[in-house]
Figure 1 (tube, helix red, strand yellow):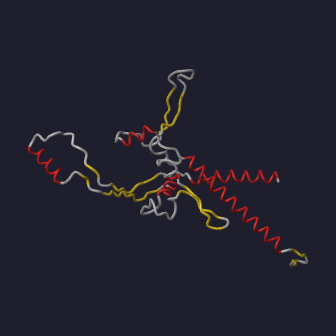
Figure 2 (cartoon, rainbow, N blue to C red):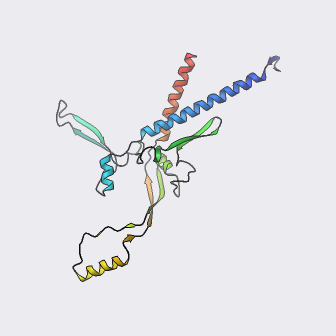
Figure 3 (cartoon, rainbow, N blue to C red):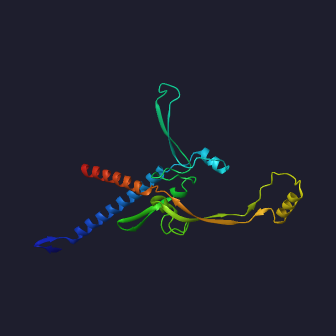
Length: 227
């Protein structure tokens, strides 16, 4: 037992109160992190299949989302204004980025980690201090969130050459060219291309964090009113 200002108190009571407050902070931070991850994942959409197929086939495809204003061609609303967004491979600046990996890969591969009794760090696995997807300046997920430029290196493996569609050589020059190509082998060498890439700002973690915090605080206030 101890006394303060003539009042006697039990120090253990204050220790228990402190333990409760730390536990409460842990639960709140964990709930907020988990909810922010869910909201962030749900905000990302995959590019339309037609766009992905066209890109894979080397055909022209729509790169960015485009707002289209037209009119209804038939039905009760014929002639009325119709507005919609035609989705492309990349989302519009200011909106969450496109999710291009299957399942929970890419930017959807997120988790959280506690760094102190009252603090957690969360986001994509490739967020900070990651060993994967490193660039020469900032990590890829951070570039999506904040916008900016970074140096990207694309690596291409050695692969088989495509067969020529020219058929058999007909002239002496064609014959020499085909012969020289055969002498070099039927595989293209591995190579890499490095270039500077600029990304517009497409926040997806900060909006999710703000939404999660708002939901958690409303939940806490509701519990407090019922207590």
